[in-house]
Image (tube, rainbow, N blue to C red; front, side, top):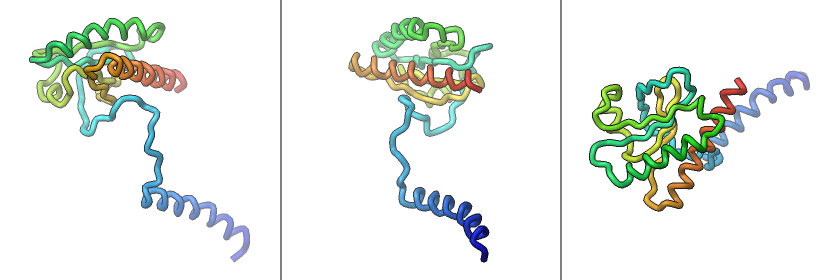
Length: 157
């Protein structure tokens, strides 16, 4: 076998061997750049956002009082914090008995949690409510960082 052919085959086989090794030994990095949590199951919310790229959804089911009241106040702060991106993002509060949302879909969501939903209605990231105000503020900052990353990514396409 010629040297060139061996080098050519090696260029294709070495990356495959490296990928199999990384996957089998679980050497992947554990950290991610997103601040929210990915949902384990697929959830669709028919959010009416018209020309908006993304929606921030607050889940307010029946029986959620103090935590949901705190998060409803945070909705106003999020709207201000979005700044120039506010025209690209819809902020939606989904309450119990909302006719546009299936009850089964709302039951899959945590109470008083924020969710990032794409323009097709797929729930992508979850930001759970934290009872400690400082921890909750950090969760909301993470939501804003993720939102701005997604908007910048959409602009680059």
